[in-house]
Image (cartoon, rainbow, N blue to C red; front, top):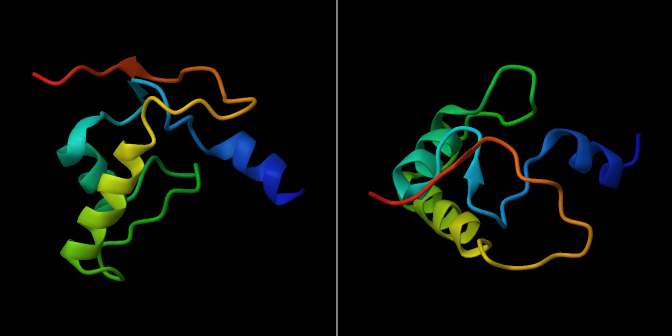
Length: 83
C-alpha cells in the first residue's frame, strides 16, 4: 500500500473542526502523548518526545485548522468548540 493510500485510510482530516478524540490543545496534547485508538496507527509519543516538543507538535496540528487542502477527507468525529 502506498504512503498516500495508507495516510488516507488511517489519518483524520486535521483541517476541520471535527475531532475523533477531542479538539483543543489539551486533547491534542493528550492524544500525542498517550496515543490514539488501538489499531488506528497513532502511537504514543510521551516516552519519546519531551513535553515541550509535544506542545509544539500539538500547536502545529491545531494550526492546520481552517486550511483547505486539495482532496481533504470528510469530517470525522464530533464537532469541537472551545468552551
